[in-house]
Image (cartoon, rainbow, N blue to C red; front, side, top):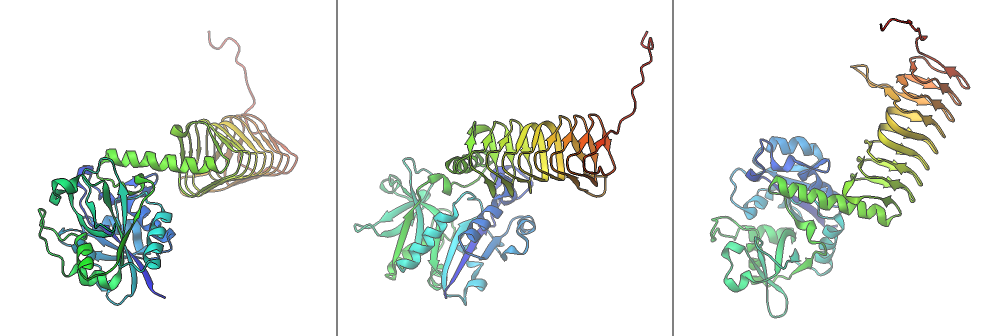
Length: 418
């Protein structure tokens, strides 16, 4: 079986971000740009990933850890030079190599897989991802021959007036035959206005050899957008948010206000769940059917909500397992807890899960009622069918069918305020 390898270009400075951090480690919707690119490759079944690092390489390596191999580009001499730094990992391989940019974070795995599959099926030595833009300013143009085959790519700074009018642009994402790519990289020259080794020159070299090349036109142009500054980072965050929200709505979830609902990656939501505005649902959350969330709710990582759960206004839950029919209507924090079926959590209830050193767990049994303004000091366990009086601070376990009252008796001092 032939190899499929990805090379992620992550050596640039990204000076327009105006930051002390590498551009590649800035986050979009909770994940670093470069991490999203690597995960896209992995989700497209490309598990051997080489990341070419350079400027502030330690920051990129701290994000990706041992999930990838690393090559180092000491001088910024262009994309062709960057890919060549990965030669030691490629020289003994046969198959396909995918070239990705570390600052193009919202490419769909399905799009990348289509590119790979077309390249393999059609036996193309180079397959490009391209796009059609009415205003292609800033992009390299795709030059095709009379038969529609890709002849070469011309960077905008080197394009003639007629070439500048071409609307098909190079997305900068490629699938190459590994060995032919390495041969072509050693032939490219920095004969351009930038004095750099352009990866795009490989296409012309392959065509001169009579090697078959092709392209896939991306359906959604937002997928190929890159991040150069903070305005573009915010714009791509919006695109990603809308994409995720649309996905859930198509699968039976009601989102009342798409512009003010923030659902992160890897979230599962059952049908007929309603999400009110200003609700945030972080990664790795599973929500059942017919739930109601928000407004102004915060569902943090690792939560599991079963069917018909209600999370109301100004409620935060974290690492919580909440079973069917339970209601947390408003103004509560429930962290590191397991809550049974048909439990009612009163307004102002919190789990005191952190003692300054360790996180501890709160367990609440089925059919329990927690009165308003209750503090549950973990570790603590409340049995089934328990009732906690409002204003209590619970530090000891509560047996099944018990009423727990933990508050000081009221004393009135008549006339004291005079």
